[in-house]
Each structure stands twice: as structure tokens, then as C-alpha cells.
Image (cartoon, rainbow, N blue to C red; front, top):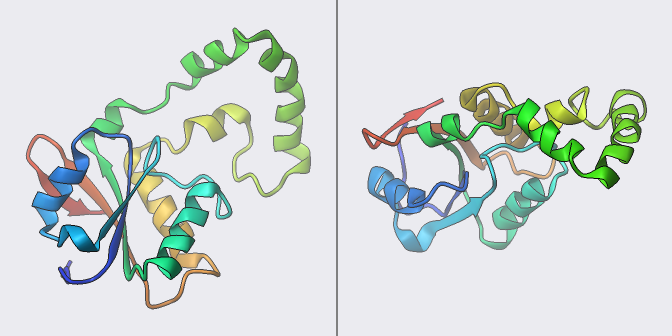
Length: 166
């Protein structure tokens, strides 16, 4: 992958501490040309989500020319444990009462949700690489992203400080 250090770029990253500095060292982009968008995980759950809206605005307002969806070995450790998460959700009585209605919406009435259940939606993709690739495809295929904007998926090995394109 050839990187133009003078382009305006956007990195979609997880909530990893110090990832911004490590990306700067690994890619050598001019910090003045870099925008960082942090999300719990570097994954877009829906083409019209708030994360995707922020990306679209950055492309037009900040003239972003290249987008990188970045996962790390730390994301592997931070994967959502569906059962633990659901147990926490079910501990909240108000939410517990609503879960059946939400499940019904997911399964029957809201085809815009790409997953079949609340737990699948909350947990995201099975692997970090799968989540990165899914997000890259959503951005590339989005009707509001200009065709000249390049989109890449990157995986950073945190221990070795190596970046590999997904």
C-alpha cells in the first residue's frame, strides 16, 4: 500500500489508548492532515449510523481523501462477550421488559438492521478482521462517499508496531 503523506486522512479506530501516536509513528502522516474518529470498536454497524454520518461530514467538510479503518490486537481482547453483555442488560428490569419487543423488531419489522437479534447487533462481527472488512465495504459502497475517496482496512499488531492491510 502506497501512502501519500500529504493527503488529508481519517482513521476510524477503537478506544485504544495511545493508538493515535502509534499510528502516527507507523504511517508517518503529517499530524495536521490526520483526523481520528474513535468508536467503541472500529466497526460500522449500519450504513446510516452516527459513525457513518461523521465519516461523510469529514469527507466533505475536512476534504478527507483517504479513510483507514484500524483494528488492533487489543480489539481482539476487547471483543464483546454476548452472554456477559446480555446478562448485564437483563439485570436492568426496565430493559428486560423491552427486550422481547426489540427482538421482534429486529426479526420481523426492521429489515434495515443487518443482524437477526439484539445480542448479534450489540456484539458486532465475530472477528476484528471481519468487522474491519465489513466497515470498509460499507464506506466504499455508500452512495454519499465520492468514488475518489480511498478506503483501507488496517490491522495493527500492538506488540510489534506493525501495520498490515486487511
